[in-house]
Length: 609
Image (cartoon, rainbow, N blue to C red):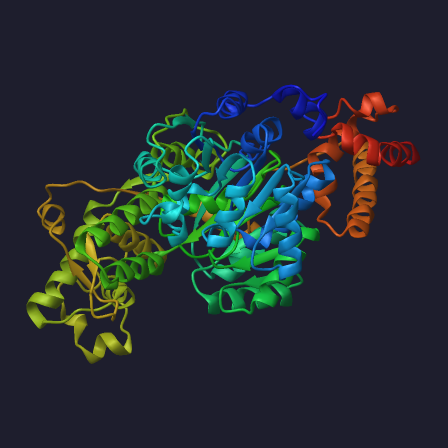
């Protein structure tokens, strides 16, 4: 970089085009610039990358960034090159000639930043190369991948402690958007960062609206959500299985939504093509397993939807954090039902490994179920998991449309009695659907086959609908007051906690949505209120013209549109109508390099509308 840039604020303003730092950014940058190690926890979209990019530009040598995201390195490097930063990457997508050119540039000191996949970094060739050059710092991105308890574990990360042994005087900065205090300790221990300074920012993403709905014909619910709240928007839909990904993507396409599948069963070529389209085109919906998304830096993802229950709050937070990186309103939508609880409990019971491992999985699921079933603010519950306390947020479904809390003790006793009598009197166990038929007094073929109409509990639950009973069962399973069998048949059994409920020693308060709200939502397909980004009509016309100009530039450069300018920057241009390059330079996101490259064209586009 130019010797005229003397400090971190100069780099921020001249290279990246931002007026001031946010949160702990400046303190982190100065600490690392002075040679200190750091462990940084900052929410997605909070500006983590600047925390290593700026000190890498200020310190002598090359900043080496270890990232597990091979498919995204090209886009990250492209974005830096657009800013005038000399950046490159080394990973398995390159042939030997391309790799050698990058290695020579590193050794010659011609790079500012070098992105390296962890498996490439750990090769003798790469380690020897780094030893021969000058390293400004090591940045370990997505550092939670080192946690063997985590949702994104990468075994290569366990070997990254080698950096402390071979380069003890080079500062290291480990960064992640997701880590409880326990995971944070594990990261510090495994990466030999026990003496590093910790910077923990707020986990809150106030622009994201959290919504969790009761699952009922989930594909239709998903379609209604997208069509009514996010038509034409870019989004991500997460599913648990590959088959569900394929089915859901095909369903959305058939319904007129541009959807692409992404899972580990697809060829590397198809995955790369689909990911490239998602990053470069507007309005694409990616339907994926959790194999997709870590490190996705597309700023204008307007929604993240889950149609299967995530296994942990950490995983859920990481995945929903991919929405609204630009700070504009976005939605995190989850459909959750009884079968999700049954399936997840069974998966834990059947999982290999020691009891301590299963207990850890069970605790993670309990926390996720608690988030789903809470009658209080979702965001409060979510952030409390990361040891952060806030006031009710006013931007989640339970704040906007508070659910009803009702005394479900008697209902719980009825269904527990049915489970008990079937087992005690007849040695039988059945699943949720049959138990509900018994309680509601339905004379089904199966009820008559087993003479269950003669049970004393037959018909005692006719006062509740089938949907209401499924809600009761779901919440009993969530609280481990009923269990699912270990043989894979999905039958229900009592637990040690059931006794206190049956004896009347424990009162159970359950969550339910009022029938009025459920009927309204079924009719409209969505919540009454939804996040919106609204511009005045004239500014909106300018914004659309600027986006069209940006799309042409991006195509000619072969990069995603947001690499040229973010939507947030174009909105500010559309609102403020700068008339000179000096005025344009005051817009957030317009650094000196981009002002020189695109300023005149941008101003012409503004004047033309």
